[in-house]
Length: 378
Image (cartoon, rainbow, N blue to C red):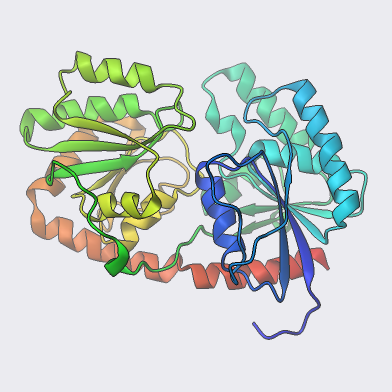
């Protein structure tokens, strides 16, 4: 991108955790600071690296009491604090991430002539099986569908949710697929694991990741392939179902076949994925999962549930399998099919890599995002 614009300031509001954190760090560490000045607004970072730009310089950061759960008092205080930050920083554009960031940013922006880029990273109404909560979340999204809000969806599925469920006009919704850079395989050192014949998932034990279903699937797999192991990576920062998952493992007598790992360094995660036979996800909903994109870039085929985000990445029977209707038996059969068929597994992996190169390269993402920032802020 040739320099033909004056520098603009982007204020990012996020709860810094999981895929949202990865997404924002991808932006700040790769976008050209000669064009874009990024400022971070998030909860206090504990045991996390400070945000840097592409020149390794530290990025200005403000702290705000932003939490995942609805809390009227804390949320109101967060809105007041964010209004103060807007007055102080005078940004050209706000980029709000996830439902809570979107709520705070859109309410705060009502007091200013400033546009908001809103990236849901999976709409909040997908996160509950309660009809009343689902309707409440949809109502909030519709109420905050302000004239200055533009949705930057991470997938076609998320775009469709924004237009058909919330009612955004197509002109107010853009799609920019999540992306990652090609990995230097020489720096992905082997992570010390006892088991070499395994499948894996990156999934904090929670309602979204639906690890209970994965254990049901894996129990059927072990009936046919008793030498296979399962690694569940990501139990830590937010894992409300962890104790339940541990009890199921004991109940199914899978103690020697399943290992739960905490959040580990990203290079370690990549090492585990790279040497896995298959990447598996039983999620109930997704935005566009980085772990699946990483698997594709490492030539690892995926078997995933048919939900937003997953279905945007895997083409059934080409670079993996998509499982309809949360079908436990079908998923176990498809995983066993790939475990037993080395040639098919290798071909799916090659197809996954080709799909990644065509659709999810970070360099293309950064260039398109930069152009969208200038377009919307003008």
